[in-house]
Amino acid sequence: MNAAVLATSRHWGDDYRQGESLARHTTFRVGGRADLFHAPRTIEGLIGAIELCRGLRLRHVVVGGGSNVLFSDRGFRGVVISTTAIRGVLDHPHGFEVCAGEPLASLVDRAEKQGVRSLSFLAGIPGTVGGAVAMNAGIRDRSIGDMVCSALVLTPGGLVREVSSKECRFGYRGSGIRQDGLIVLTATLGVDGPAYDRDGVIERKRATQPLSFPSAGCVFKNPDGGSAGELIDRSGLKGMRMGQAQISEKHANFIVNLGGATSAEICKLIDIVRQKVYNTFHVGLDLEIEVIDG
Ligand code: EPU
Image (cartoon, rainbow, N blue to C red; front, side):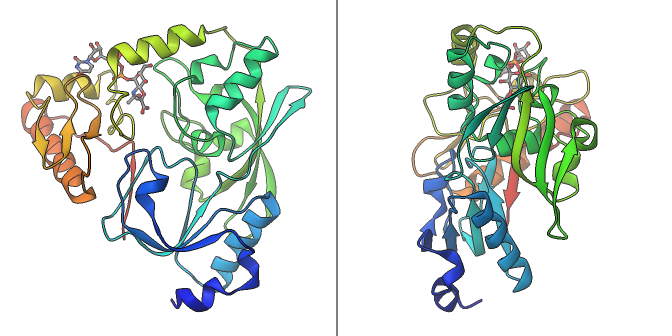
């Protein structure tokens, strides 16, 4: 791809950057440079950018808050499209209609201001509503999929469709949205359900998770009926370091960036964890984070 030619395309408007460091756009603070980084400000702009990439057969990836991804140290040869500039929350008869790039934190804030505390279990989870819906983010006993009434998505064929909660096929830290390559544009969230104490939710996370270092949250999904953190801990891997990447001393399912960690170092730790946990407990751990090749 000739990024220079691409960058001059009128389709990108003003919101593109060549050679952008992806470390700036991920909570891990890791990743090389993208040929082109584009953050459209509107849903129409997002659809246009994706369609342009598809039409020109340009390698591209759509990301939200970068809280669950690990880019390569080589960066990304292609276009990284970020939804983070597409924000907005509208009142809706069922609750709220939310744009993909809205941070979960500000959604929770808005809901609480209106006296709604059923979304407060999402407090303290970094990232955007679009990313959270696609991966069904949440806590142990509740996920955002439980609150989704419907979502407006872009299909791989370029159609904008409304999909029902059932069609989203939410599962543990995954959904049909992700499997089918749909891009979330907006999500309609209901407000029925138990109320959560936002401060309590955040406090519990602070007590058990290493929030003062950059990370991508839990690295592995919990295996059926078990806890990845506990298995990694019992494998004796807490605190293990590879360069500036470390298996957290506080919660073993987190890998933290102590400052200047590389993607390669994190990948090495991921391999070690998988091997050791398999050898010790005969349990294969699946990644929760998405590793994106350069
Ligand atoms: N444990 C250990 N050692 C550790 C970590 C945990 O023994 O180093 C034990 C704990 O003592 C506990 C059990 O493992 O008995 C479960 O740990 P915890 O309560 O911390 O929950 P988790 O299953 O590890 C899940 C989600 C988190 C979410 C928390 C709190 C997954 C993979 N993780 O963690 O989500 O914040 O519950 O609700 O589903 C994320 O998705 O990125 C994430 C961090």
